[in-house]
Image (tube, rainbow, N blue to C red; front, side, top):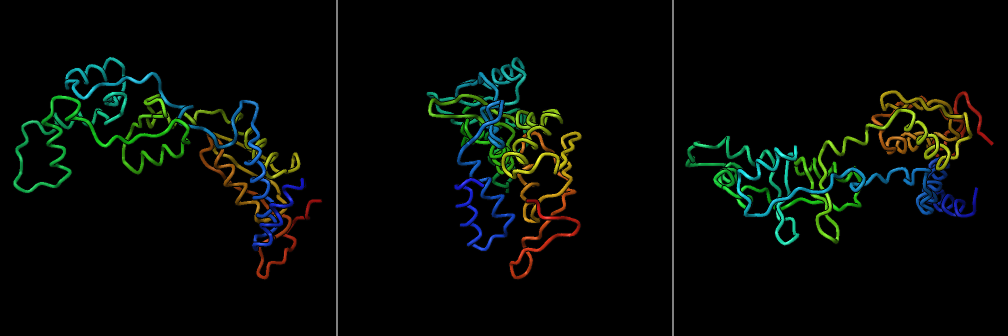
Length: 273
């Protein structure tokens, strides 16, 4: 084990971490520190918004009329347009915002209304983007991960995110864009799991662990040195782009997490040299 990995492992062991977990985390820390890349120039979990966003971005201004917005969406086959004021994204108009006007047309105001319904009615009464748009604008930086974008969409219950950086609006990402990460072939996923998880981080000897991928579901089989390395192997495999799920049939040679902290041999296995 390289000297830098020894330092990490010793520190983690002294904190009470099991041998297998300490070793795996030390290897991961070293891999993250060196930022080694694969043949395609990407690290294991660095799929960013920049990689999947759509460009160029079709936009409107606050004074763009309702009909023109509808025509813009239809012409470009898109579901939403950011609203720009002097290069600043001040809102976004989606198909849902435009349909609110149709849905509430002729609907009489009620004496008692929920705040959300009252806001929707105000938007429905608008004829231009500044009245129709959803605000404040929820945006994301181009360097953020695809996972971060998905969480942001889920948290705010939105389908589109304008992408911004120091130069302003640079793209837009939709739910469909985020799902493209799952279009990788099973063979590409298998190669990444083998090279990035097993070879680079866990330093598993070739042929020790089998990797089978079908429709994005990865099945790991074989034996690892330590019990504590199994959940780490599963978690790291989950982080590989395109992985839908992970099934573990892994066994271990040594249980590094027993009561009292003394390692022991696992059933049916020997500790690898």
